[in-house]
Length: 314
Image 1: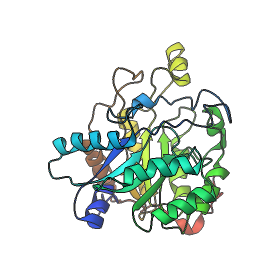
Image 2: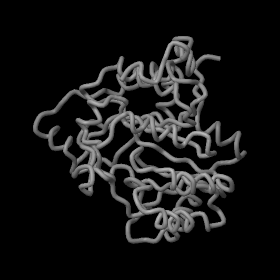
Image 3: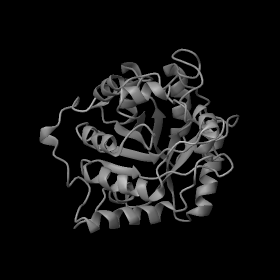
Image 4: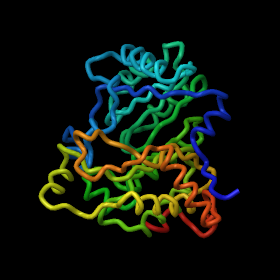
């Protein structure tokens, strides 16, 4: 049936038979392109206030953030009983293993927490940390989320990312086969990239053994380098209609085995400089499904993996 997306909600329902909610955690981390080891200032688009919810407060212990998050989500979703602890802010493997163990095991000690989602960068992982996560994955649901943002080295340099695509390639190969689920983050909408480049991104990522993908439109927010640039001279960004068109095409070229966790994001209005997409996630997903259906397509229908290699487009 056309219009089908391999969605995260369907995956969770099949895997667990019930809703599993993520609780965002601020573990007090930083990033190597912030602390001077690879750069300063962080990614040019990044202001963590744009995506970290209120329960993930620096100053609260992991346990306190877990308990606060559970209270919030149980009020909102009356039947939710199990949770993933989502270490979200900054790079959550960027610390000595002993410190990571302390934070992760605090989260897993809560009886309602069944696993971890760990947001990080591909240059903040090593075999020692992966060995530890591999052991955790024998008992818990463990996902590592690699922020890639773009497959193009020119873009990664321009946004002050501090690593190149080959670093991502290495991280994926190091993680593969350990029982650790892998999620990748991609940003669509950098004004110097094109629709064809984003389609190529879908095709290239389709060759990798990743489980999940998050697609996010580019937000321009306050207190960022891109924000300052945008204030001085506004640059062209994708409208909601244009972004929707790109996502439809992107998904049609994406491996149907990759589970799509997210296809649109949001940012608080008080820090948002670019135009807000006035649509809720569920409505946007329905529009994208309709866009696929109108073309007689589902996720992956335009993909020809046999003709691709892992360096076809870099």
